[in-house]
Image (cartoon, rainbow, N blue to C red; front, top):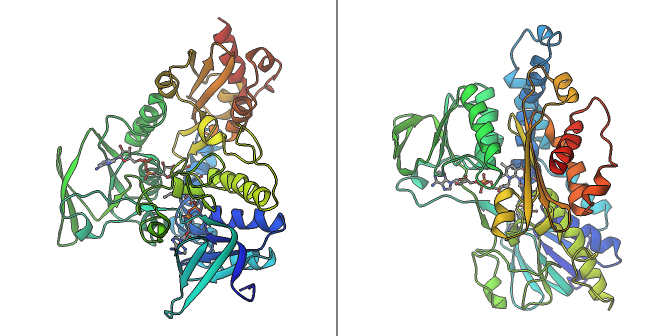
Length: 473
Ligand SMILES: Cc1cc2nc3c(=O)[nH]c(=O)nc-3n(C[C@H](O)[C@H](O)[C@H](O)COP(=O)(O)OP(=O)(O)OC[C@H]3O[C@@H](n4cnc5c(N)ncnc54)[C@H](O)[C@@H]3O)c2cc1C
Ligand SMILES: NC(=O)c1ccc[n+]([C@@H]2O[C@H](COP(=O)([O-])OP(=O)(O)OC[C@H]3O[C@@H](n4cnc5c(N)ncnc54)[C@H](O)[C@@H]3O)[C@@H](O)[C@H]2O)c1
């Protein structure tokens, strides 16, 4: 531990996930001292139980699908995916759940690290209980940044907790492929994990309460993913609730509105809970178990020395958005510590405006879903004057990319300002096209100027030209 003699630091960061690490890094680079408090692995959910292992599980399947979609290349694919090698590659991306490299990075960055479970204990104070029960009291001169993330939600279904279901942690770290996997929840985790484990040999049943998969995204995204999962042999059940769960011998049994289903494991992927239940927020007048209510500089409303950054504020539950918030909050903490003015105006260096206006995300299903900004539904809900262009991705670049390439491009345009509100691409490998859309949305590039952003031929990006032509009519 890099320490200050009296355990007083400029900034105390509670939780060393990807968000906390970035807050600490920014404030230290800004000339302040900082300590990270971590109860599990330095690096948090993304490195060990979320983004990295899940994408590593999916990548082999994607690569094989890409080769199989090109005549001439597909003839070279004569075998099946090596499951053991895939799991081993996944293990290497989590460093075998060892945080030694991230700890080294923390130390090399001049950030203090204290292992243990932290909780707030009144103004600018964090008490850390180590594994041996000893307590350390930390004081922050300027700010405490709470970056304790989120945990998997388990709905109050009769018997569900008792059967010890998989959460996303077990689904991303499993050492064996379950024969039959039941997945409850057809959101991002449910769709990605159904894709991954089905490709690795599980017989998967995916149960979604709503009428479509990926309900927060454009309807065509969920429809395309459901069709592809069914094509891959997944039993996709929509509009189905689970009322009870039990074990019978080696089987898990779910009682649903659509009859009983049996499996070897059940993954519950129905969303997240904020990491605020047991961190002493009540000692500073806040309610435990709720997302932290923050302003755009990530400062907790009513508690000026307290910041809530990353999943814990519920704004956008994505690694890259947590890290973006960390950069903005870190800049605001440094500025306030040095008496500089902090502008809360949209797009200032101290605020996370993109949380509201331009959040990019990629769902790594087959097809991928890449989206940024507002969906059609969100533009309508906000009452914004808008027009939607919704076209197939069918350009020279896409037909070269893969035989029989199918996909969709959707663009939501603000008709008053003639700028993009949001863009969604659905199709193989569209994730790598997303940054172009993100730049257009963040930059509020006028449609008239976008005409000059000529897509190279022959790439899938040519669909941009088709979108603009369609808009102009
Ligand atoms: C299966 C899955 C796949 C995902 N894939 C992606 C993806 O591909 N791309 C993407 O952008 N996002 C993805 N996400 C979301 C992403 O994982 C989260 O948004 C991100 O990890 C949040 O980072 P965080 O630092 O805010 O929180 P966390 O990573 O949860 O870190 C919080 C840290 O705080 C620590 N902590 C908590 N309480 C205490 C305490 N009292 N004392 C000390 N330490 C404490 C925890 O141990 C943890 O290390 C995925 C999520 C899941 C579940
Ligand atoms: N590729 C990525 O960027 C990525 C990958 C995974 C997770 N994430 C992040 O993690 C967050 C959490 O993911 P998630 O999938 O747990 O939550 P989610 O909110 O994306 O989806 C939860 C799904 O569960 C359904 N549901 C709720 N209760 C149910 C019930 N009782 N029975 C059946 N279905 C039920 C909901 O209708 C919804 O479709 C995501 O919102 C995303 O921000 C991102």
